[in-house]
Length: 145
Image 1: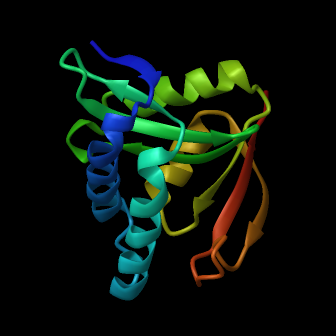
Image 2: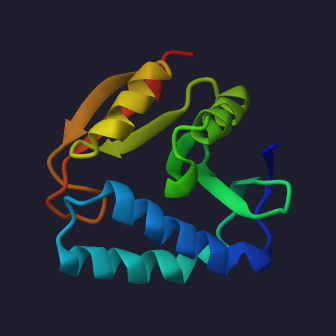
């Protein structure tokens, strides 16, 4: 049984660990230097960020998402439970709040691109660089709503 709840101050270390394992499982296109730089950025802000967390019956985080306005900034799932519907559940919750939800996805992350397209998102544009100016192309998506 998975439930959704707001993040708490004591979730910080678990969410950073979950993020690291999820990125290591899905973002093999990152250079080692960029992976370390992004890790430092995430470790600096994620513990305080207002996230929605999917937890198991023991309140262990299995996934989380960050939303800024109507933009999904992050959606990460523990690699041990990928494919079990947790990402879908988080995204459906976000869409219930924001039917016109937008997000950006790394073009090299084919699994994530496929997930968002299956969930009803449509491409609205592309960028050659990520939001930090790194050479990781983004696909801009918006839910059809």
